Each structure stands twice: as structure tokens, then as C-alpha cells.
Length: 395
Ligand SMILES: Nc1ncnc2c1ncn2[C@@H]1O[C@H](COP(=O)(O)OP(=O)(O)O)[C@@H](O)[C@H]1O
Ligand SMILES: CC(C)(COP(=O)(O)O)[C@@H](O)C(=O)NCCC(=O)O
Image 1: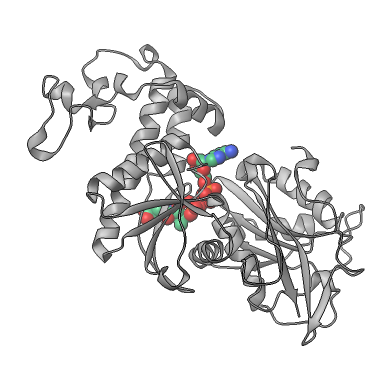
Image 2 (image 1 turned 135 degrees about the vertical axis):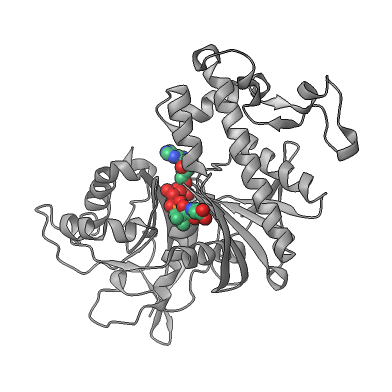
């Protein structure tokens, strides 16, 4: 990882982590160098506004030591919170969500002197999506037939919607407003299944390698199509074309082949299609249960991959007969971390802390066009989303 890809122009003042089953996601605020001396501009009511960027990074959970090093060297020491000898000089409030906020709490305390301020995972996911949809322009888009189209979000007509977060596993949450939500379903066949089965079946070592393989593959070599069963014709009476998948991996039962006889790229393609299709279908069924027309898909499984988004969109479109719409998010993998970040506003104010360690107290991540601050989106490390220019209020 090259430090130049991250935002370290000045001290990092706020950090939120989402520690999941597969990946650790980080969102941190890097104030601009052009703020006044203490990094802030006073705007009245004892409130100061700091301009800067929300930056994003991710690590594999199994390589948690890399994440600890990153935080130690690039955030704590860089911000003067920790001496190079490891002693911690200041309190640095860190928001944490995901299962790892519990599992690794002791480790972070022991290695970095950080005590997590824990936020609920579902709550954070919902806060993250609402924040993105309400404040970041051109965040949500549809993807169908190779066409990406940004969706204009009407703030007065945002709810209800279904959020489908595809991480290691999949959570489906009906969202009715800010902090108003219910987890209505889920499935254990998620991104972890794709990666886990993919590693076993293709011997590839990483998610990126598996995706790369899937690009080159042809799922029809392994999937049993309707046409394979119906002698090349459609089953039009029930609306199934001859090219529709009748049974994922179904050809493998009759080909008399071993795993080695299949090309790994075809296996990867079939697997990606199976997982994406299945999630699209379960999502649609849950949307139907509650009469929801809009479905937002998040989680790092999607990774902006056209084939994945197309498969999910087609599944939703097909099963809902065009009634429901699948939508995707540019910061798809950072929903939980962003949600945890926005929860800084709930913290109580402490006068003892330096400005850059103060709690963010108002509802206060302003990126939208209707305030006086510029909100250009800045390209950053393409693997880790895009930095978001914004300002935060310190009270
Ligand atoms: N670089 C990567 N390494 C591992 N898995 C990745 C990577 N990029 C995307 N993924 C996919 O994203 C999934 C994890 O998504 P994420 O939303 O971070 O879930 P979690 O919170 O459970 O870690 C993985 O199971 C895998 O399918
Ligand atoms: C347990 C989890 C919320 C953890 O979140 P994750 O780390 O997978 O993002 C998620 O894996 C999940 O919802 N699994 C599906 C369980 C089920 O409903 O069958």
C-alpha cells in the first residue's frame, strides 16, 4: 500500500472503522491545509467549521496487523496522538462497528491504546446510506444493459427503501427514515461464499484474481440452461428463454467431468452469476413482501463490477416484471464505516480536548449544494472509493 494514495496532508482528526468478517473499512477526516491555524473557521454559537476530506481505506480482516500499523504510523503518530515509542499522549475517540468492533476491541486497546466507541452494525449501515443519498451528489445509480445512469434522489420521497448489504453474508433492511429501520431478512450465501468457494474450486488466492478469472469465463459451460433441458427451445409458457439458467452448475452432474476438466474461469463466472442471481431474487421477494420499489445494493462484494450489477439488476427486473429497481452506490463498501463516522454527532462536548479531537456535535457532515461550502468530489485510490470533500462542525 502506498501512503501517497491516502489523505495525509494534515492531521487526521476523526476515524471510524467497520470491522467485518472479510474486510476492515476505514473512514477518516483529513482537514484541509488551508483552514486557519487550528484547522477551523469559527461561525458563531461557539461552533467551528472545518473543511477537509473524508478518506477511505480497507484491509483484509485476516491481515489486521497491517491495519494496526496503518493506524499507528499514518494516523496516530502523524496526528501527534502517539509518540513513535508507542506511548499515547491524547485521547483519540474512534468509532467502530461490525462484529470486529467486539472481537478485536481488546487488541486495539492493547496495541494502540484505542478504546472503541461501538456503534451497532445495522444502525451504521442505514446511517451511512442515508448520509450518502442525502449529501453526496451522483452517489446512486442504476446499471442495466451496460448502461450506468445516475439517479436523482428526491429527499422528500426517499423512504421506504430496501437496503441489501452484501458483505461476507447478506443483510436486508427495510428503511423508513433516519434511524427507522428493520432487518427483515438475510442470507448466508454472500460475498464470503463467493470468495470461499471460489478459492476452493479455482485455487486462486484473492478476490481480485477471482474477479479477473470470472471476466474471461463462460458460465454456460457449467450451468444447465433451459435450452439444455428443452432441446434448444424456450419454455415460453412460463416466461423462460432457452438461455436462462435452469440450474447453476447443473451441467457438472452429467458431463462425466472432474473439477480439473473445467476451466477455472468458467467456474468463477458461474459462481459469480449464481451468487448475484440468488441475492437479486431474494432481494426482490423481500421488496415484494413490503411493497418496496427501490432496492439499494451495498457491500464490498459488488465492487462496482459490471457483470455483478448487471446480473443483480436483471434478476430484480425479471422477477418484478420491471416494477422494482436495483440501485447501486459509489461508496458501496463503506456504508457501515460512514454511518459510524456520522455518529460522532451524538457525542457530548468536552472542552478539554483540542479542536481536532473534539466531538462532532451537530448533524454536520455538509457536502450538499445548499450550503456555502464547495463540494467537489476528489478522485483518490480507485480501490478504496473516492474521497469526499466536506466540512464538519466542531462544537
Ligand atoms: N480485496 C478484497 N478482499 C477480499 N474480499 C473482497 C475484496 N474486495 C471485495 N471483496 C468481497 O467483499 C466481501 C466483503 O464485503 P464487506 O462489505 O467488506 O463485508 P464484511 O463486512 O463482512 O467484511 C468479501 O466476502 C468478498 O466477496
Ligand atoms: C452476521 C452479519 C450481519 C455480519 O455482517 P458482515 O460482516 O457479513 O457484513 C451478516 O453476515 C449476515 O447478515 N449474515 C446472514 C445471516 C442470515 O440471515 O442468514
